[in-house]
Amino acid sequence: MDFLRPDSWADALALKAQRPEAKPIQGGTDVMVELNFDRHRPEALLDLNPCRELFEYEETADARLRIGSGVPFERIIRRLGDQLPGLAQASRTVGSPQIRNRGTVGGNLGGCSPAGDAHPALLAANATIEVESAARGTRMIPIDDFYVWVKKSSLEPDELIRAIWLKPATGPQYFAKVGTRNAMVIAVCSFGIALHPDTRTVGTGIGSAGPTPLRAHDAQEFLAAQLLWENPGPLSDALLREFGTLVASAAKPIDDVRGTADYRRHALSVMARRSLGWAWNDYTAERRAA
Image (cartoon, rainbow, N blue to C red; front, side, top):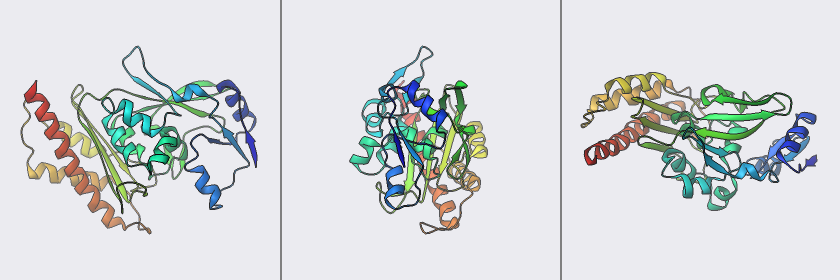
């Protein structure tokens, strides 16, 4: 196995073009596990750590956040929690403190596991993924178009993930996860919700309950039409139950060692009701305070 260490981002793109089979590595929190257990042994590893621009984030001229693919989860928690609360909550459930210091959202996207903790929050927040190749330059992929199949994304063989683009939250966001522990565990299933008062829309994301991370489209449309954005009040039990049912029906789970398909659907329904309740309570409190 070859170890490729570029001097710069341009050098990394050139190496990826020459060796499209090379596996990008930064934190290595997923790649090294596969190597240690001999589950996968790529022909080459492409070390992106010398590309220091990947470790930076910035607010752009159009008031979006551009987060380099190498920004670790811990930095998102400490520096971006107020602007991206859903992603920060998901980041807190990733592994141990050591893993959060090394693991990245870019790594979650690159691995493209349906159980990746960042995916539901990215879907709910309508993220856009910036990727680049030496031959074709930069392209922007909406998060809904990024996931193709189990651990397969829409990345071309010579492309690398450069950054994640997100709008700062305009309303409450929540992330919930079911597992044997709160962190250091692969999710049995997970759910993210984001209220977008500026557009009167709702975002959702489902993890570990399908071949790819999923969005609950019917649940989003139902809820956005039912919510009283201008004069918020308590949500009825019937509305909460219907939202939970629609979220569960959007899942495509299987039975495996972590849980059954029926349990995953039930858990998603419960998480959807609870996270919606938390988010709406926050929104109501904010409107009353304003």
